[in-house]
Image 1 (cartoon, rainbow, N blue to C red):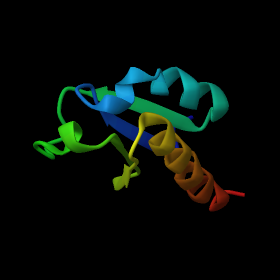
Image 2 (cartoon, helix red, strand yellow):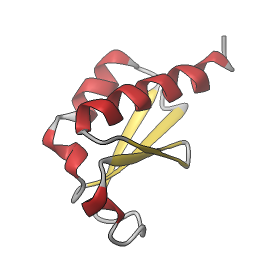
Image 3 (cartoon, one colour):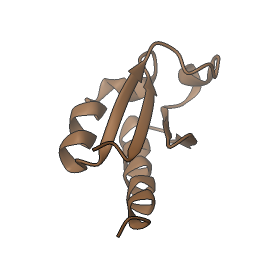
Image 4 (cartoon, rainbow, N blue to C red):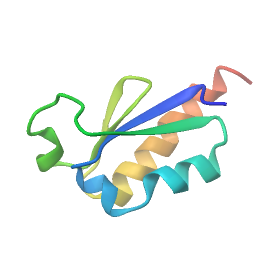
Length: 81
């Protein structure tokens, strides 16, 4: 369906986990887009991050970032319930 869009820079540390498969399996309403660059130069080297409906979500580890992404996805989906 893709009512929530998660964008990930393919050079980011969060790609050490299979975020696309994990999120799309857990949330059928989510579309994960892997991009070459999200134009936040240098940010992908500092911390794992992703954009969820254009909101920047950060974590100290890929797993922490994934947990925060899940929480924001749930908030976004709550609008449609």
